[in-house]
Length: 205
Length: 179
Image (cartoon, rainbow over all chains, first blue to last red; front, side, top):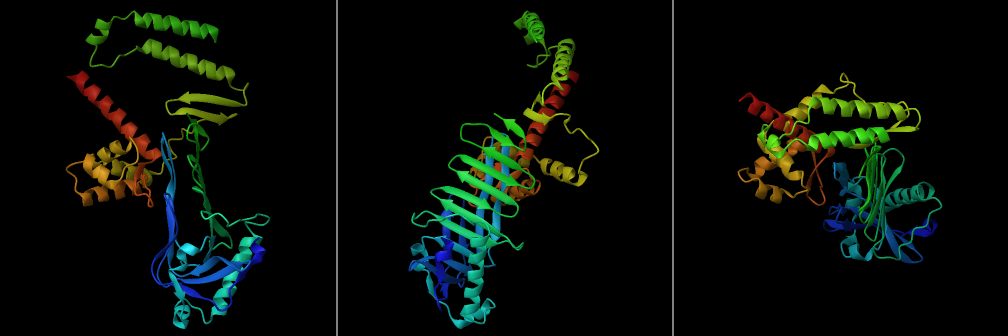
């Protein structure tokens, strides 16, 4: 599926105002005005963007248990390139064509530079974490975000119908209604709505 | 096991023979079941644990914190030398303030927004409340949901609050006994 994405030639956009790209009760992704967006298409339809500018990811990867809360609230600065594959109509109204100085302000000498970086990111996504997997964007509530994490890997956020999967270098968080899994280097918690909570090898019922 | 159950049932019967009046006459509402029975129960539990150790792949220890599963040969960590004193003093310092203890008590019943805490803790200004919450968060005793805005008590927070509660109750009992 990811092979079929093609960047739109010579189309670089920018956000004219602060915009929320994704939001759920547990978190959101927001970009500042001036953030650049390079769109890509599949079968002639715009399916996502690569972004570069200023943004933030907030995600409450916290599990509440009878013994106390486990986890933390992720607050991630999005100043590096990241991509989004999702229903794009909701943010189209916030985008306007970028000027040359907008690109220069972020260190780009031309649109091609940004598109090339975007293509590399998409290739890393295809060849790395999602090799052999299919991702369909027909449902309006499906979103996939991929962020470079500075260790030559990609961190992923997938959201669909109230469910979240977040996998980063130091954190794994999965939410499916009342069922939650959290894991980082120090803690582990698995909690269900009516079953036991397992934490670090201890079972509390 | 059957013999142990019978002996425990006999002890329960003997305890039940203590009259209600005698219980009322004891100091406060604390009922001391007696050192002899307590020692016996501990010895019996130790015997059962030793008896099944080595026959099961895992041993199960039921303690005040719940069920903890150990692998064969593993013992509960009790190394008193292995303490991060800087972290410990940080935590104790966070606990050493009445308002912060009240905040922890409120959070024991579930996550709360800052305005809910303000309502419950009259007499603390909003800025003071924020400052106390920052201290508790830095000590790892509470965590804030940045998206939803609630404050939650963490596992260490819950554990130390219960420790403070029990210690204070014990100290109060000792004070009453010495009167």
